Image (cartoon, rainbow, N blue to C red; front, side, top):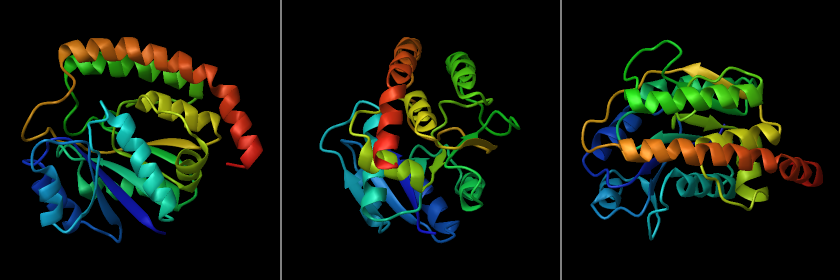
Length: 243
């Protein structure tokens, strides 16, 4: 299958060399695309130095939502069967990629989440973030009807069904990982979580400050409500186009 690994980066020039070397060392046949989310440092130049195709946003999308749209559009346009999100901050481990790809290759899932909380190995996030993660794990697990342990994980893989839906049929914004997950579920995607290890970022700081973490929970609840309101619209899209 044709596999794309989309590296998401915003001002990650210090972390990117390690990330790209890790991916190139453990490459089992996938293409790498760097999505530079409006960086003001040398993120793009680092990608060019390592010979990686780079897609640059002229401005920062304000979060991961814009980069998600970009890699779905790219993957659909260029005929990829699987696209994986891989964060450019150094937290994701390239040798763990087969874990999130395998369920799609075996035909068991369309949307795979790499969870650091199943085996509790490696970096476990900060205490304040874990509060928000726990809350939305419970909410989304209830809606999905399956247990989810790491709703905010950026280490994910998607099969053709999800790529086609968001890369071609769904024309609206994606506001959060929770929003993306619920819309995928309503579109009929089979969702699975698998255990992965993660590491703490080496340079820089997370965008999730205590203030942003608090606002994330408020916005997250709004996104869940919005997702539920979109349920019938998503199902109509699927019925109309066979998405």
